[in-house]
Amino acid sequence: MAVLEKTAETPFDLASSAETMRDLGLEDDAKDPKPERGFSEEPFYTVPPNILASIKEGLSSYYGVQDVESSEFSHLLIRSPNDPNGTTTNESGQTVPNSVQIEDVNMIYKVSAPVHDLLNRTRGHRFVSAGIRFVENFSKRNKHLSLDCDWRVTAEGLSAVSSVLTRRVVEVGLVDFKLLLSVPQPKFEEFTAPLKANLEEMVKGGVGVVAIHVVPEPLTPTELESLPHRERLLRTTPQWVMGWLGATSCTLAIRKLELKSWRNFYLTSGYSHEFNPIVNNVSPEDKAALIEAGRARKAEREEERKRVNREAKAKRRNERRQAAEAERNEASTSTPLEAEASSE
Image (cartoon, rainbow, N blue to C red):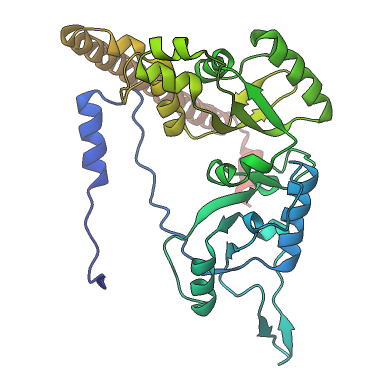
């Protein structure tokens, strides 16, 4: 272990880096870099009773978890600037308990028993990370939706509770899962008949978060032996992933990079870090031509932008000139009496 002390700021040159990316043609629609948001490293505290009760009620009623008092739902933490289970002194000098409401919470973390004990004994200290993201406050991020549960199980937390979920579970085969990966928001009628009927029945209970379970295909030993190792894994390995069930469609609810990884593994013949059939299947010469064509399109858009700006500036100058001429004409045509009244 080592203690590092920051002694000065590092002069990162983000602007020049962004210009280099544009010059290389790697960003077709390059934008200015966003300002750094910094880190949120508030101390970890044990989840207060009112929040814990809401989480357990949601897991039980919405996700159908039977035993919410099991060890899977203990050792939960929350990040907060103040201990939500402690007290504070108000302006009148009275000691009052700290209160945290559901709308004040973003994420709930799950840790092991030893880590939970360590964080309890070091309350108030800041840690970069601990445990896994278990559930997040879905209602806070989606205030425009009216859902039966405030909490959404995260992709990390799904591995801890997948075995005890009895509701909001969509079981799909390999064909349907590939459709989910390749189409952003496939309609119910695009899936196989059994899954289509299952989704139409499930959506009667309302739209919202679902856990998608990729069920392995039943294969005989002879079929397994005949398959390449990679294909054998795809057909026999169960998978869990979070999704979203809409009124007429179902889609995956995962990050873009994770989605790219799933696509690489299930939809490409060889695992590559770039899921782009056009670029992956062309020669280096054609790829260079594609990049050059992208640069040409960027140059055309830039010229069009400059032309529009020039026309807008010319229009504003013409409007100001006409307004000035109209004002001069009005002043020259005013009567002496009107001019005298105006001076007074």
